[in-house]
Image (cartoon, rainbow, N blue to C red; front, side, top):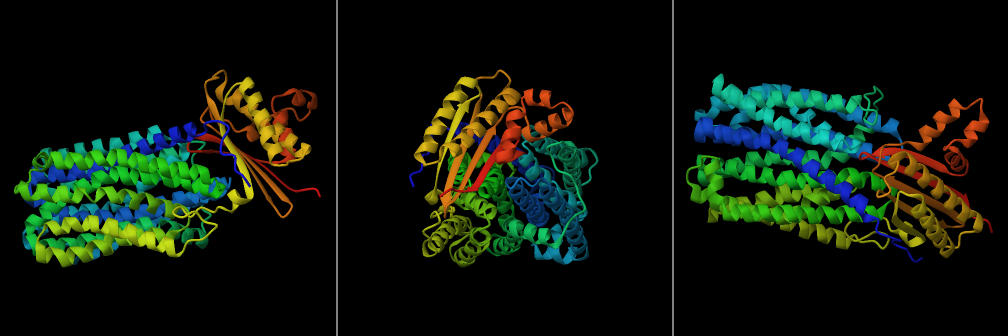
Length: 600
């Protein structure tokens, strides 16, 4: 059946919304990565090369707690997004609570084991007798406070679901400022040594966790902690969080093996260079992880709604934004390598400059790897997400490095990052090609059955009565083209007109320049008719179902006034169709579902 793609432009709302989320995710992730960069910069300034070596040795500890945070934060957010897409706030609260309690439990276990095996761990990470005391001082404080590193990932992911973007940005930019001030205070004023940097990081993380959870729990559109947790939710948490947790755990293992390789190839100087390379990698993570993680919330909800067109728009825009931001970073590294080395107080700048220039080339293919990983993770193709993670971040990185670097020198360690990213994409392409199916799209693997068996329109309408009236006429034409009966057409027209008028009056007041995003999907199969109407807008939050119920209670003994109220249309629609409302990403989402057997 022919699909009518649009009556007018419907991309503006979604593009604008995703851009805001991508910017907020990037800026908040920038705050997180600034903490790591500030730690390295101040370690180099206060403690010289020894400080950078210690940062390179202990940095895998961050990966351990980041893995726990990613497992619970991303995994929990994806499950919660699916629940919101199914209009089940109770399950959403249960998923949030499960992620919170599991995060605490695993973090405590990790800290206990870290303290017990601390000495052996530091030597495995590449510590020498010369650097051991400083590394031990730093790691002791960090391991004890590691739970806060894991927990601050949860507000980062869940605030995006509630659409509290300003709070998200302020929270994590403030964390960077707090981290810088506390590091400086403990090292410059109190002369604590390397443990001062760790203490500043732990305290800034603690502040972020306390404020972040207060924001999530106090808001009506936020989430609530509940005690109802079962084994199924925990299994789902591990399922959806595994790719992100695996990435961090592989980073931990990669650090150990890479540090050992660098010590063999270039000695302590190799570790110092690696510390600078990691800062460039972390900077790229601000963009790539920020944007890819911004897509996961959208994709999770849209995937559950089976809104393929919106998913395509999100993925397309994510790749475009990533390229627009990553390419300038690569160019900047190639133009200003010496200045970057000076910033970190690195000697032997020629070798370090060459290293960061070679490494920066890997950022371009990494765009596809990271965005697709997040996509497959959100759409239940966990094995593909794990394949990309393991290939790019570990297997295809370390094998070339260990083969090439001892024979041809240090620079081939950095070439291995590009080999890993490109090689992973080639393997992914082969897997997708040999497992292709007619009912799935080639890369995104979207279910095409609905599009093949149905028809849809997707458009935007201005928030004024005249525009709504015209849109209803177009909807009637769409219904006629799809052979709906007069009764069915009237149901669709009435539902859409009543909802659009109600939204205009309550969400936008007299703002006629605002637009409302509309999508109508008609599916026929075996004499079964399903009509799905989805309405989104970024106006004032308004739940028409709750509004209708409130008025119904108010006029329980006065049916005449209730009949004259502006909720009558909603009452009529509720009797002939299922009506669902939810606030996702900080905008209004209203769905009307008509499900019936067609008459012969």
